Amino acid sequence: MAGELLLELQAVSHVFADGSRGLDGCSLGIRRGSRNALLGANGSGKTTLLLHLNGLLQPSAGSIRVDGCTLDYSRSGLAALRRRVGLVFQNPERQLFSASVFEDVSFGPLNLGLDETGVRARVAQALAAVGMAEQAERPVHHLSFGQKKRVCIAGVLAMQPELLLLDEPTAGLDSGMQEDLLRILDDLSARGISIVLATHDVDFAYRWADHIHLLAGGRCSASFAASELPQQAATLRAAGQAMPAVVQLHRSLVARGVLPAAPVPGSIPQLLALLAETPAVEPNLDETPSARQRSAA
Picture 1: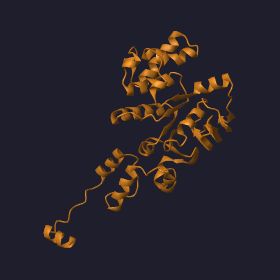
Picture 2: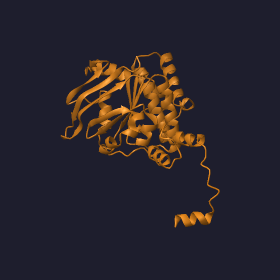
Picture 3: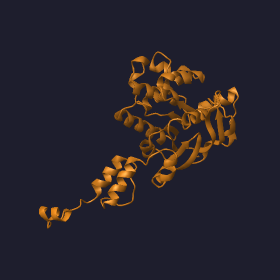
Picture 4: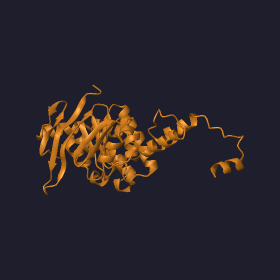
């Protein structure tokens, strides 16, 4: 049921072989149907956390619960987890290894033991979801960086996961590609897929997410609804994050009497829409230019 806890980290720590800590008592929950941003600076633990959610890393301490049950790290338990939780790496080269787009996306469904008809149906559906249906037969090495990221997402979607994890999905994408990615994520969310993405881009996190989880020093310092972010200035500063640019701009316009204090826009397009709906401030025609100059003096 939407809103129920799907995955939960309980005081999870992870110590790497060199003694460094990737996570340090990190606790947070991911709810069904939610859009989550793991927000933090480089080295804050975002990627390490994603690798735990997918079972690629095991906690040194603490536990991970799936549907309220402690994660089973046996071979069958991890296989069951990865059918439900798919991970898209930051660098697509880490994830693409087949000659053609179709072969790469079909790898997961084939490993599930599906017949040819079932595999083709899943691949077609996944490629259509990311706008790559016409590229099925293209060699992977002929694709652009953004197209490779789409194929990685399609490969995960072909497994029909409940939860999609993405590590810095906007890295290396120009503004047009980022807009395409946003549309894909919106479509997936509308289909009921829970999404967690790691980012250091506070503007992107604020624009896209329902819930924001702030990471610093390997632990989750705060979790809150994205709509509450404008009230989290101190918490953001403590995690090395600035207030989103759109919030700062809105506050400046409110201080000048151009816009009302509410609602607070979540993106620049929303801010522009508010400005378009706001009556223009009429100039004082009774005041001559020379009078304005004397007043300024």
